[in-house]
Amino acid sequence: MCELFGLSSNRPVLPGELLRRFGERGGNTAENPDGWGLATLDDGAFRLTKEPNAAARSISFQQLCGQTRSSLILGHVRKANPPTAKILENTHPFRRNCCGHEWIFAHNGIIPDTTALGGLGIASLCTLSGVTDSEHAFCVVLDHIAAAFSSSETVEDHGWFDALARAAEMLASHGRFNFLMSDGVHLIAYGHDRLHSLADSRAALRLDAATDTAVIATEPLTEGPGWIAFEPGELRVYRAGRRIARFITHPRAMAPAPDGDLPRTNTIVSDTARPTPLTNGALP
Image (cartoon, rainbow, N blue to C red):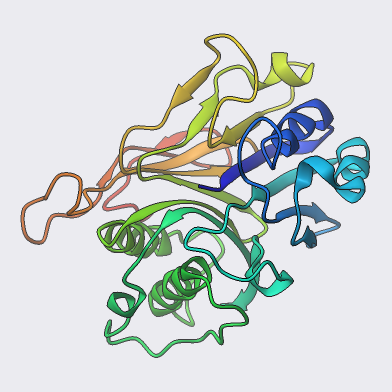
């Protein structure tokens, strides 16, 4: 049911072997043959390449594995479930502009009752280009983020993390909702029920001690005990290879939380690496 790959680092890295293994999950070592996409940050903007066919048999994907060098990567291999057309418009990742940022989004799971995503009291900023529940969910998430932004918000204000966590919790209550998302600065990873992080990314990518790197994948891409599963309902936010925020959400389908309960939040680490306490996900 689709798979995800994400990387965040404080400097451009070459994840070629991990990307190759991920591509094999697209129609060879796993049954995800219906499309692939790869978004990489290049000079401050995303370069998005995707095809509506199997990554494991794509010459373009193989070429990208050898060429990709980036500090922020988001990838997807697709299994169309429920069956929808194998066309570019239905192929992840999806891209939109919102709140002065370019956003990239890819989803693993299924939200069967897409009509339940409406009626939120928020005017949608998106126009759908395809027919997938994933793209619809992306637009709902962006609508929640946009509602949290204000004209006075600064780059350092992360209040929209709360809105993102609430939207993830709500959407996960309607089905299965694992996703990766980025605004070109942060890598956001939500593991409703199926996501892993690589414990020692430096060793796997042969990086020096000065390189902070986080690698996320739906399923472990290497053998051994080096991959750690997300907690159910866990949302993480990474910046430059470091985790700066963490939420534990409670989708209704998993474990109902008390009425009005907020997503649980740990600490946030500032750009100076000093822990700063959070109040419901926002910097004080």
